[in-house]
Image (cartoon, rainbow, N blue to C red; front, side, top):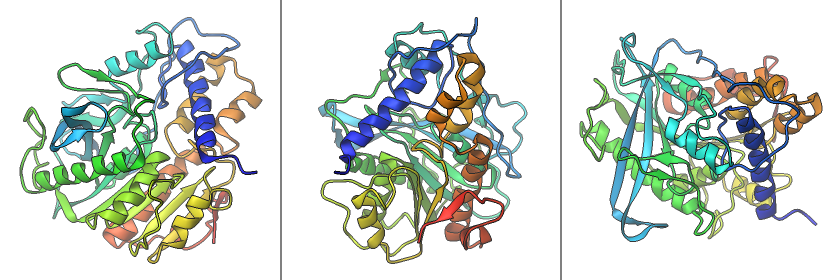
Length: 403
């Protein structure tokens, strides 16, 4: 009998918790949700300083945080009298970045919440720096910029795919990432911290409603309005920058399912990418979809998950399913490039490391993350054809096309 999908999600979540539990023991920050203790062979005397790879695009990257409030919707967790609040980050091609500091991968207070949730010292970790320059002016040489929005997985954080996000921004995209409040570690401008909750739990349709409101906020930016609840200054050039006729979306795990739901319900999104989304929702996703959609599968494959196969059968437009040999559920995110940096500090054996990141080599995973989402959105939002999407590539022999 096939393992129930809820059991698989719980098992994968526990794997991620063991990973962060071990990492936090040596003071490292990883893009993973709530933790539990894990034994390690040895620990370094101080915190491990992790690094993120730089993007490959021709433009520097800027970023800004926005606090947005949906005053038409009560929060599904906090209930009546509490509007739905979300923290978002906007990433974009930038100019004149020299005087703007690099943004941290995770807020220090959010990182402390990670650490204390695992039972470790609150100040044990050092967070990586991203390539994003806080508040740098937007680079615009012509018209408006294509937009991509990102939805994270369960018990996670909007920074989980920073490698992909800053890669897209460095190639000229506006990318908006979202913390799904109460299913993410997040902090609001007034200092309030929120952490993931299991009861009540958010479902993919809650994520989809969040994203549809964020799309409204993108419309505000395109119209020259400031959607930030505190009306903090926006980077120069961000007003009017988004192109509302070229919007895409991608998501990991539960966020991949949310991407499918948004695509079915909201015509503003022209192209969707799911990163190993299980595609389970209530009601089930059975509507035909006539716009481009791509699956990057790993463990929630069409062969083992009927819900993914069912969703695939309803894709009536351009569609593609790729899968990298040796990939695990989290292999197409920051985890794959950060975990290996900890191997020596943790005293992990090769077998233990492979159990956490799979057999997909981290350097290869990095290139896949940078190349395939960019090629997909370039094709469907910019009309730029890439042979990478035509079939197996000698440059990526581990990436298989699933017919």
